[in-house]
Amino acid sequence: MTELHFEKKCLFCDIVQKQIPSTVVYEDETVLAFEDIIPQAPVHLLIIPKTHIPSLADLKPGDERIMADLILAIRKLAEEQNLLESGFRTVMNSGEGAGQTVFHLHVHLMGGRLFQWPPG
Ligand code: 5GP
Ligand code: ZN
Image 1: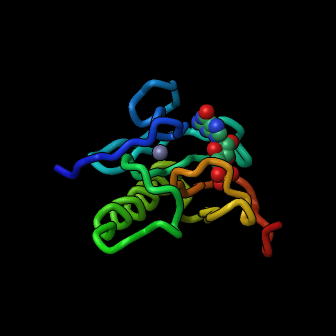
Image 2: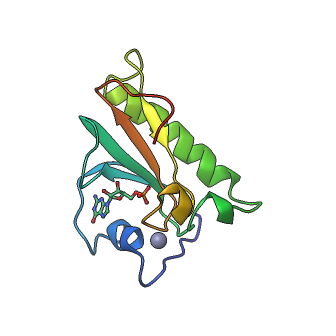
């Protein structure tokens, strides 16, 4: 069992600990997935490590298992949401300059509409 680390003033750590309600769609030992509160597509889920990692910039050796679990959870959720054929967009904003607003690593999984490239 991996030890989880929580930050006091982190919204997503609060969501992991169920101190703030969310619509959870997937949960295992290392990963939690829930609906984004302001969806930007018909399907808009957030997939996060349960342990507090602020962003991709903070990843370190030893985080391989967590990140592998996270990626596999994305694939599983994309399948559950019937997005494997239609396609889906995954986004990780890292740092303020890239639009990150919650500093607990998360992947946006969006689908159910067409997406443009390049993103804004
Ligand atoms: P970021 O801008 O950091 O890439 O993404 C943060 C995401 O968290 C945004 O899409 C925002 O809508 C979502 N969000 C912010 N606060 C809450 C909340 O309290 N609950 C849920 N479910 N999502 C939230
Ligand atoms: Zn956190």
